[in-house]
Length: 268
Ligand SMILES: [Zn+2]
Image 1 (cartoon, rainbow, N blue to C red):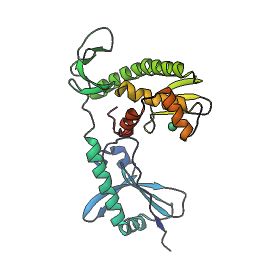
Image 2 (cartoon, helix red, strand yellow):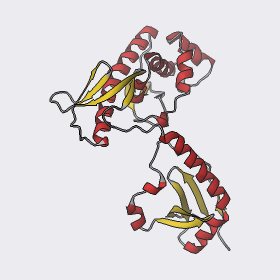
Image 3 (cartoon, protein in one colour):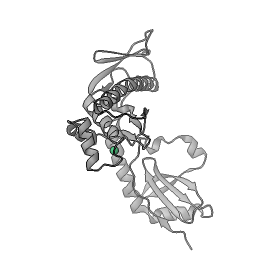
Image 4 (cartoon, rainbow, N blue to C red):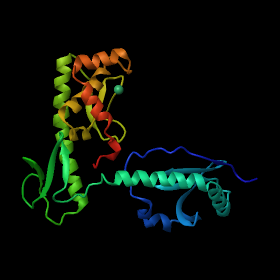
């Protein structure tokens, strides 16, 4: 009897990844990356041998992954893919579309690139210099890097600078709002999650995403007030929103703004 097939839901990625044709050659060498002709087009897929009784399909920004029991032949797997052709092709098309839209956010990490800091635009300037690795001068973020620096070097230095700013700025906002509201978190730390701007657990430990410093102070304050409000209310009920309002009376516009921002689509 042929194995069953099962569908997986389309879930959005946490991070923008390289498109399928850029998959590392190592995967192909290892024999895990395979191909099949789907609707006249060559389609790559990753094959994962798993302890399971059915063949499963998953499509995300990496393309198609097929999980199959060890005992199912490659030919049977290809037949199962063809059987699911329509579903697979429509999901792949959705992902291509998503990538086309979000790929536009990808920054070219070089001299002249523009980043957002506290809601303002800063232009990257590469200048071989001694001293501080990155320093803000007016509307410029000057990086002590030679003109031929790689994108990875530029990106790393910018990210480092942003994280340092985040420790200082977010720390200030936590202290200010906590003092004003007479609440006190047990501790707070930076987070680099791709799914959350902030969090607060029942022990009173607050985490704030360092990427918040891309945004203006009122937006940062809203996220800080939101997490501080969880110190007394761990849900999002009516009492919670009263507490947010007590800590930050003017929070609504900032809440609307951050709601429209997609953490996964930020360039860093
Ligand atoms: Zn919350």
